[in-house]
Length: 345
Image (tube, rainbow, N blue to C red):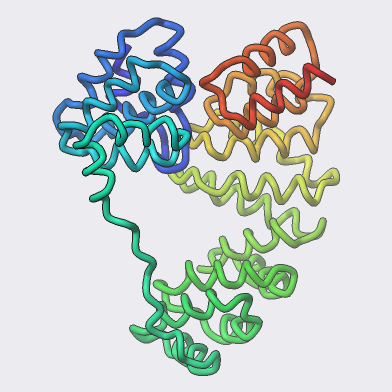
């Protein structure tokens, strides 16, 4: 059973969720927490066993499992990665649940007090004018990334449109420049359409992102082409959610051509994108979405469970599951509240 935590099977450890899902398995199968403690203290590995196990124990502790709390307390006392444990606990548990450790254990109090505070990055170009920063970006030299970062901190920069249209930016600037152009919203749509019309253009993904957020029905073919481009990239599973939301926002018969693709994307191991795919499928085909909405009540992603709890047709099975979500201390507060509201309506 510990194999599911000893190897982190998520596509993207930082954004895909498994902690609540795995914690439910541990609880429902009555797996001894001592076995998780052994994984936590095991040798270093490349499969994120420590982080995955830590997330599961933190979820169990947040739900009131005293054995999990004690495992984490002991690790903070003498484990080599105690600061990582405190970081996760501090962001996941109510303050009173973990700060009481400091009141009861002098060593923990010292460790908490000694924890370094995060530092904000500096702004070396704070005093430069917008014109100076734009000139630095235009040169594409070594200081251009910092100049672009400073410009983005000052809000949307329409002058970047002319700069981007005139010259193809260096490869190292395409990502941050694309993000800056996305912040311009509808004003960037004409340029995005130009890029999208040129197959293989280096800024094609930026174009797709802008059109997904601000395009209209005429841009549906470009968004479907961007979906096909992602399909051809094999192991790159990021971006389907953005395209799904854009097509759902636009709607219409052309956008509904994505429905078979949404069904395939639903099974992607990059689970953080499933909520966007579910919302899009429900928007584009509300009458055909009962099965995935019901299935979503058991999903590993909180946003999927929340959306499913809001919209799944109230069959006896769904009512029973909503009651379980409402009463489950492992569940997030948002999902529990939505489940309670549906049942009370």
